[in-house]
Length: 430
Image (tube, rainbow, N blue to C red; front, side, top):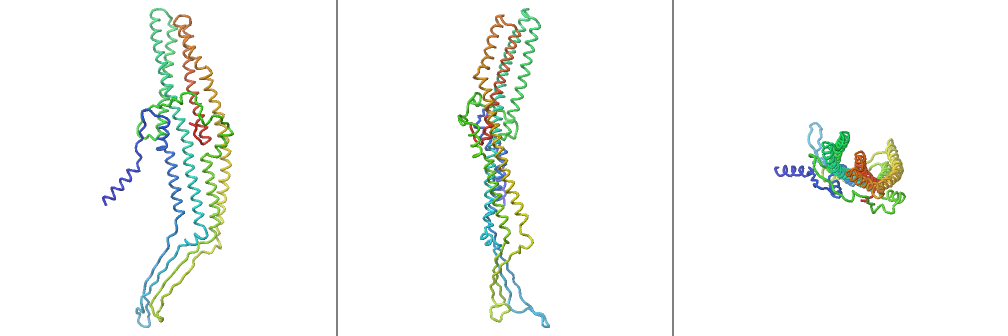
């Protein structure tokens, strides 16, 4: 008894998921591995696959034979009632319709329905990884960009603090007016506002990523690292691609389309099964009875065989057939709708990718980011030599900060567009 209790407690303990351990510095590959192991959406999809597997096991089962027995003794009342003759024994055996179920093919059709449902559940498991995996990648990029924006904002805020100290010193010596001091102080306060927003955005992005990774206890403190996502990099799978080629790939590989195909097969098998159910089940029986072993016995040893069935006079599976046919039509329409949705997804994601890529190219290779940085450097030198006004210096500084933050957002938009294109096509490019 104690051993059984111990084994039960051990099984319960094994069912409890171990706490998620997130590295202090997390890469995209590590995040994907953690998510595939602990993501709630994938765990739910795994449970659905387990349920469909159990349904297949049920469909493959063969009905257990039935057996019954009875015993007794006859009695007569011809004045006085008394027991009469030898004991009566009766034994019967039935197959519960298992043989006829196999001959007619009902069991095979039930297995076909369950196998198609299992194939659909497995494809939906892959589809859950397709859709939610793209969401994980987008959240990873969101945290990476928020982390980089926070680093940049802290750096520029430090520069503004140094500038404010120098300006206050120049004001005390009478080199500048109070209006100039107020402008620099305003710029410093604006920088503090941006820093506060960047810190909040980073913490929110980290909390969102931790949730997707399966963290449930506390708020893990970690950072992310993926240098390839901080620059424009065309994924190898997208080189020489077009909307047409990607659409063909999506129609061939998207897991939700594969799952829908399995659902249609399930519905077709269910229609065949509903028609086959019109044939009533026939149960075979064998019976042996005896009360006495002589020719003059009350009931000499007797072996009998029989059939038992129902007559399909009133109920001929009309409703079940209509329901199965309606389900098949529904699955066929769902397939058409999903194919149209796939085409819209790929087309929309493709043009979003093209637009985001053009923006990043303009920012990084078109010279916008470098121009803002160079303008700030030149105006700073001119301001220090007295050749530029404070307003020109602050404007160059504000433009530099804005362009850098915009560049990070453009980069995030680009990678989000890549991941949405992955989701639309159903193939990983990164």
